[in-house]
Image (cartoon, helix red, strand yellow):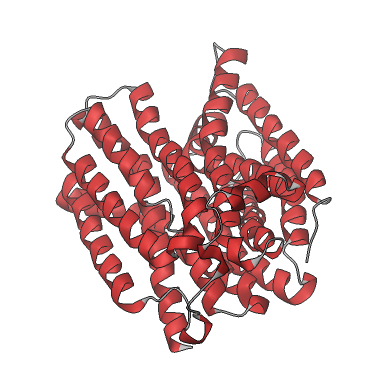
Length: 403
């Protein structure tokens, strides 16, 4: 089991690096606007590029993850990501910056699916929910590292050298992955596996015909889409402009959201493994809870105390963490030799969610409230859209199968 836990540690650190890269722009925004001569629209495009590249890369990953193996895919894509990160760190304008972020999105695209595939091989099925929850919790620390720690590093080294320091750490983790990780334990290896002879598109055709796959994918699209739209962009203006918190208070409230994610990942995993024996009820219940909590968030008036707002955001993070277990759910519904394809296919919708909700909510707020697009009424409408989507998909999720 020592090798299994070493692999778990490296997988968790690779997910942490992915989360760190993903959220750096929120902190680096002032420097990027100045150094790359960007406007707000350009900054939005620079941030969205990562998500679009990440999500589209799930398509080839879903085809090849079970055939090539998680280790080789993670290593190969990591070097593409490091090249993109280096290109981004030396960019002087939007063109090179966007190219770097696109390559970075491609490079990080297997840092969740690869670890989940490895954990499926190295840990027993009865504990998969728990160990994957721990993986999510450690990975979420990357979002925290992209806040105050990154600011301190940027103030010391500048944003370009700071980014290159992250690349150096990423390189060390990739080399460790090469030396330590095996795709499966020795006793599970066989000279001839049926997956080698299967058409690479066969798994996708099977998934496309599955009602459960589409419901589960819609669930993760809504859950992570509404979550990331709030966490990565709209929560700041909501807290500071509509609810009138100071920047420091808003930062503390958003920290509560991340703490909720860290607590919720292992918590929901344990509930899934030990109580329900299936992730279905955890995901469906968590989605309905998320709709109720978002309703509470919408009801917060200006002048709300930091403690109350922080409690709502903490609860939001805990409820949202339940949605991470869609991968554990989909893998129980397919044969083991296509679990990687199923999880990657679902992850495509996970990563498309933020792109659609980030842009869609912004368009709705601007169109419906052109004179006050960041006012309380505009945010109330945006949150109402989220609530309707969360509640609707939560009810629909109840009709999926479970094993």
